[in-house]
Amino acid sequence: MKETVQRLAQMLKESKRTVFFGGAGVSTESGIPDFRSAHGLYGGAKGKSYEDMLHIRYFLSSPDEFWTFYKNVMLYPDAKPNAAHAALARLEGAGKLDCVLTQNIDGLHQAAGSHRVLELHGSVHRNTCMQCGRHFDLTWVMEQQGTPRCPCGGLVRPDVVLYGEPLDEEVLGAAVHAVRGCDLLIVGGTSLVVHPAAGLVSYLRRGVPLVLINRDETPYDGLAALVIRDNIAQVLGEAVGEAGVKES
Image 1 (cartoon, rainbow, N blue to C red):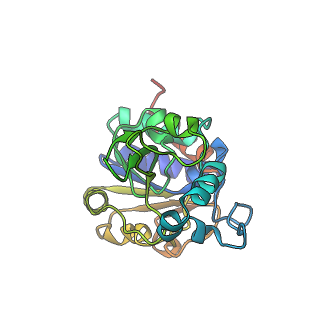
Image 2: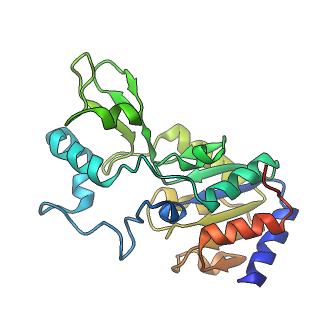
């Protein structure tokens, strides 16, 4: 791994506008399962697939069952940022990282100190009353018994993109703009099969290097300037250090 880390470090040194695009694999070392891996949680529950239980249809028709499942399976309030999150925050602080694009909903990039984060699938830390629009944080949600209800009586929903819902157009547009404007795109911890998010790679300008850090193959491996199939937290931590970006 040393040679590939050194190559990545050199790319980081030469880059002025790096963009990082990450998926579930970025947070696995923080104790949050990669739901789509063979050892993850996607296997079905109560006779339904997890995709069914995280569908907007299921939320609207069975909010009590949805919230029970969501709280038990999707929320990890005690999770802490790992070395990958910390390395990216250091890159941003050094002026080397333009922004983070993430498919994750855990808020760990912000917890690590990153400020420019585009959350493609929303965040568990934001929750909204469907009746009056009042906002609630994750702490409030975890304190509620059963289905969270606003003081006005309205049903509260998590501000995450459920199956059957489109991505936020403003966030997606900003992500496309970031990829088009970068001079290095690092993609990590994602299989790049969930669209439309995975399609962001196609907006990379010709000649701009693509780096893929993922344990498994992706449909874009053949287009990458560098493919690293290793632990993303270790890779990013070492590469950022090799690039001369010191811890703050």
